[in-house]
Length: 628
Image 1 (cartoon, rainbow, N blue to C red):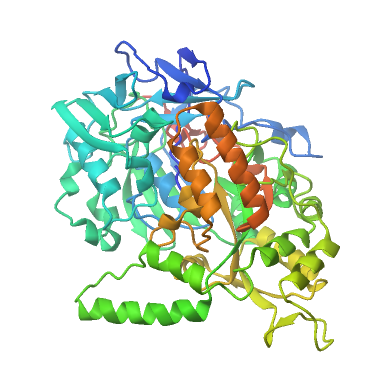
Image 2: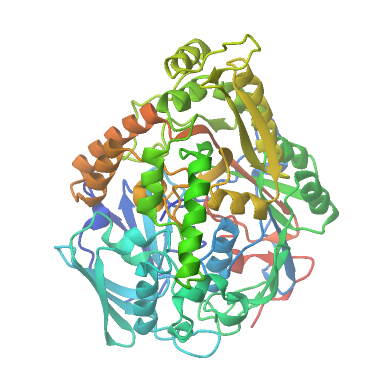
């Protein structure tokens, strides 16, 4: 999936590992005898990492206390409540209608998956699939058929078994255009799921795909018991009360925008001693200062997404362990390519048509939004020369040094190194304000009245960048960008907004520009972020970048099963991205988390889920003797 999905688990005691070699091992035939989950892991050499194992490294310039997780010399205990600070509270218990990453981290605790996709902490760069629901599988040589054997002891919290019927129900939901799940494209090649037995599933493909087993795997399995809820109603359904669990935890309480309380799922079918913690509280703490205060006071035991300055401060606290891991994500400055006035006029007509038709739901059709982007481009950001000029006019290396203490890099493309789909010869645009000024002049933006601001057709080059309120790092970065762009004659305003308002504006196309972050995927497919089909409601092409050349390259790359050709196509796509600049990629930062030292068991994690393996964590100050 895209950066919008996350489905990692903690990889412990994986036993025998299968290393799969060749140009595209992800698509090769896999045949395995029946085994218990956790007995072995499939490893895919050269695959794109979805999640990276947590590296407990030192914070630059910090003392040794930050270099390790809390000591686990004591025997694991059981019980207690872990309070976790998240920047944004989960917005939905059903991951197929969720909009926030916190919702996906929640789903990783409550819903089952066929496999967990992980990257081990080794130098071979291989993606691993660790079985969860699956105990045996076969991928046919022509990559048109996948057969899975499921665990026969997995159950939902309502007592029903997890069966092939749940897989078939989930696939139907994933492909339903009324639901408009952002990852639906990944399922289009799957024609059907057949259920010859309750715990056997046969996936049939209409064509071979490069990532056959990964296509089957994405993302969480839903229970067919919710089939009575029409999918057109899913975005308005209270899933916290409606959705059974089949993970180590289940939802105990849901307070919109504030916190979600999880409790141990006694029906969990994993290792009998897990989970060790009784409850997890996911508490929204958007403001950095408040987060640090609560962490130091013991009101919160774990927090991720820390900026380097906060991590350095916490490193000096004896009660805190700071954790650093590689960042498989990037922070970007996004551009709306559609004229806002044209969109508002179109939207008024669209809503009137929906009312006449008696439709409650009134989504934006992707084709119509793409048409608007072509016929009514944004006065500033509809022009690639302007987007490119802004990238050239931002000293991104200075941003990294000043605001991230050097703990980041500047990526040239959203396909991150060292993925084979990334061209290692590609360089990011340099800081070149003189060239930026030439690009703006060629686009017709000139300071005609000598006031220091550029104009064209009577319009001043003025725009607003939205940032999450409380995210001090992004606010400070935006202030630096504002100063740098002012030297070019661009009048950039900054608007901090709370998370709910931020997403409402983003999804409602009410932003000129915004600073946000994407997490990378195990499957390289840029159509979800930059394809025309992702321009509509539910899609992730928020700025509706449309470009025929980029679209053709992406379509060819996502279809070919020849690894060498696919890599070459993605390299060409990267060059087109660099030229068109639908985003200005600001930095790829290392990730920092902090845990109070009473939290034990944090041995490894994966970059896109800070709580990976939380079912194995335990609290020394609250736990009782281990047992179940």
